[in-house]
Image 1: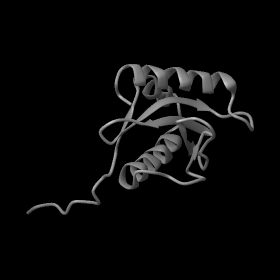
Image 2: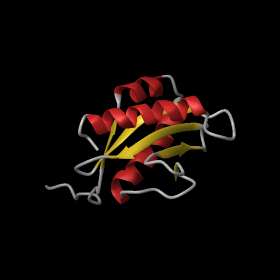
Image 3: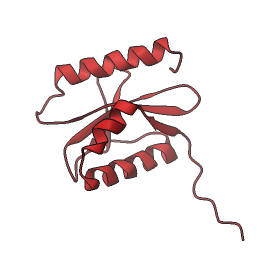
Length: 117
């Protein structure tokens, strides 16, 4: 008997290895909440605040794990309906720390140079 298929995904989310490494150290509840956000993002192609936010003046977005922790994962839209999770961190201040933003910008440039975006 054929299984009914779920809603068609509009996008495919890929985590860079550095984000996978970061998430290994996070509690299970954070991973579960993040997986739910990723599922919604793949299904709908976008997320609204408070689940995600566009970084003003940037081609960067941040997934916001806020129920079970204060984790952010920067992501960017790439070619061929791929969304890349490029950098994760634990948010400890009101503003995005400049060093975290610099790291995300650097990774974005690398993806652009590699022809992924």
